[in-house]
Image (cartoon, rainbow, N blue to C red; front, side):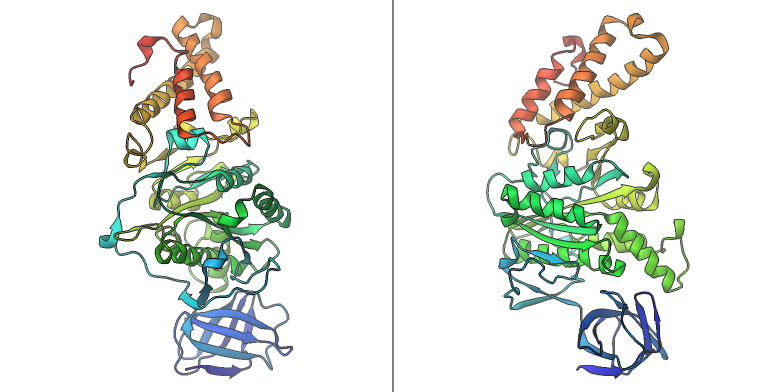
Length: 444
């Protein structure tokens, strides 16, 4: 049953307040109709006997307290879906913005979805090839996994994001697609991604949702839910292998903090709401595989760490929920190494179950173990060289220094358009390990 209400009691930022009507529900979809006929969507986020609070996703600019019609839809926020979404660009609320016309869709889904029943989950297997040696060889991305990227302000994570989307693919069965959610981005950044996808021809397998920095900040709360609803339809209705890339989750969390402050909720760590963990988990846990369904959703959330602080609430909580992390190094970035992935701080907890003879190569795990062991020793030798000087190092230690420099310049550093296969990655790792004396190769 639809209910209409005329007028508002109060406006505070992106929130509007009305006297509580009868027969409405928490999280119910709302349409705000302005005097000029413009419509803006929102939903109920708090209600009591007297006052109902509605968050308006396109913001409240231009809304006046009087002569405003509030329409309660009697259902949660819904999204229209279609197989034709691939190759299209939408705004943060799911409206097409690519001048290709309206989306011809007959299916509607609740954007909040339902968590996957743990008993219905299938353990993630097989991998997604990104063409980036550090990821494919050392922290392999497994289908159905959630593997975040932790970056710092100013580090080139946008270039890494574009590269992952452009190069990612699967081997074997199934159709592959990518859902890309962009939150709080500058206009130039959004254009960089769109232009790259169009020029490389990859846009045909991408669904892009973008929320810009000059868009309503509250719209950012909608964008990942919209993107994941689309991903669930493509994966579990159409049986596709879907990679979801969400950037920047820090912008999302800061919008959550902003709304929490306006709602006058009691803050937790660094002003974030106490339910930040639950909220992020409701997004990350929508990745996975379902028994009996050929599709899968793999998630790469990308976030910037304020002041490069990995213990900040956003990366800290994300690390608890997800299955590993890829950490970008400011030191490697300043050396001109790209992508500047710090392999010793990075890991993929599900890697062991998606590699090996069946999926990649029989010696993959041993090569990875040897690389981690040897590169860890490189850091010890570098610290020793700062004290003693390189000339006083043993011959073996000098070989480790040589290996470290070659490994960073040839394995970690990778030309932006060099798309390596898993075979090329593993072969390159073996060639670099030959720099070390045979006595130091203990894992192979």
